[in-house]
Image (cartoon, rainbow, N blue to C red; front, side, top):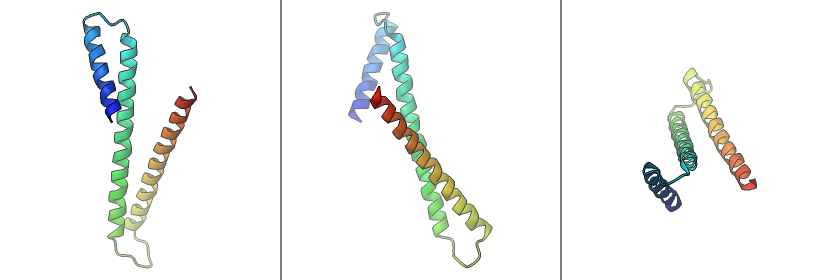
Length: 104
């Protein structure tokens, strides 16, 4: 967290210098800002999927069980599976991208 705030303050300082036409590395600043925003959006996406998954599990757990599966139970089970798959996919792509960054 401290590292991200340090990067953010450094980017703000470089933007200030580029506004004064002192800093010649405007493209580096833009690329670093895009990368920071992308990482932040990925985290928000994972958090929102996790919250929706918890809500759907809570909704399914309060339904009364019987031998027959009603439509709402089927829908709840289906949504839990889809959200679990999305969350696993997000973490898998994150792991792959981190692995590729370490290789470079």
